[in-house]
Image (tube, rainbow, N blue to C red; front, side):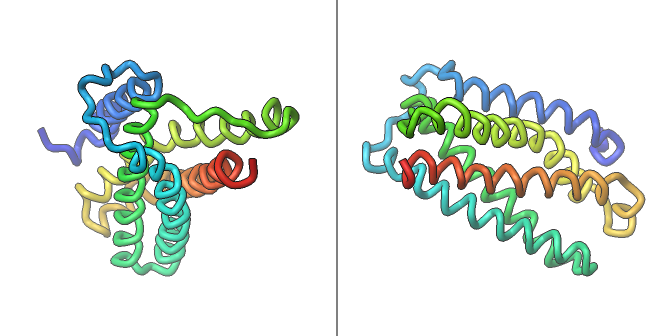
Length: 184
């Protein structure tokens, strides 16, 4: 099968598989016996490392977006592939920790706990979920088409949407981290 001719279908299949794995880990449906248990200090460090990864991803998305607008394809590609790698690193670490320990409880003031934190967290999660198929789609287009061909695909349009949503999701992820581990 020629993937370049079936990018939407392949993107759909990969998105379903990826999101199924994400939900299985997030809902602790993966038996813990299947996962090697890291030492407690490693598990405790994951949120802090992920905050740095997320902040770095905000920067690489901004660099990639700017490079695309300037026509610097090589820099755009490097930045977006870096962002994809950072996202994969974040996701593996986050899901590993959540699969073992469950989600982190929020211990802030009642108003923040009842209204502000859930709202920020919900938008962060929804955007992260929406980004998965968009990012897979633009990544597959980029990997299967030449630069001149890409200009004739939905890559520029979907890429702008994916980058904007990804940027907001990563930024809100840093806000969630600050609320969970720094502010409260």
